[in-house]
Image (cartoon, rainbow, N blue to C red):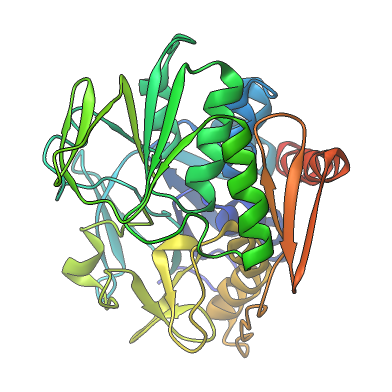
Length: 360
């Protein structure tokens, strides 16, 4: 065991909660040996991703260089993929065979959107998450592309509108359920559908996919939807390696207590999409990870000093600002529906301020 004033802290994943907690951890435990581990050299901010696809943001505006962050905050950054977390041994293994011990650690590895149950995906398609992998495969897709979006949630609709604004010739949203934007209230959903209609985006609901091919998505009823770019955004999926050594919910996400401790393992925490908040379940959304950051920072410090843990209580609702391709947006919050260019400007200010807080 290391001395209480110089604990070994592992931040496993460059999710919102871990990144926002770094400064508080460094200030609160100056002598802590803090290491951040992530598979990518840079972290992409999901809130600006539709704007990047639409052409409003350069790649560098929505990405954070993790080595530079580590240097500024006087922590260590290791680029590597996590293979396993052994909470009883308090040890993390990477795919390259490296093992690291910790006194306290927090998982914030997000989720992915691969759909291996669909034949031909992801061989002939691109999961939207992880974002860096998506962006690398998207590359310089030409404006004449025919695009198909598998998943008609808010994110799927945003990406469809962004691709249309980018210049895609045809865009189709394919949704397994009866409506697109099911998480929105009915009035907001109508506005979203109107925006898709104005853009000429085809919407196919109650759809079952038989196969994804190189140039098409084939439905079980025989319908063939031409696509040279098929993107999967059909919900968050848990990383399979977590279930091998950690307690998980039926969807494979790590079960945590109100203090964000992994159940049965008080020196291991989890936050963001990879965590299942058992006392107050919420949808997977970055806004919850942002609110978890100060709780994570406080409880990691408490875990090294024996002080009481803070309890995390997620908000009941949150402001949803949905970009509509161009510099206009739709807002859905507590029964209100708003739309206009001013909402896009508001979201732009919020997103730029968030990135500045990490880059500074």
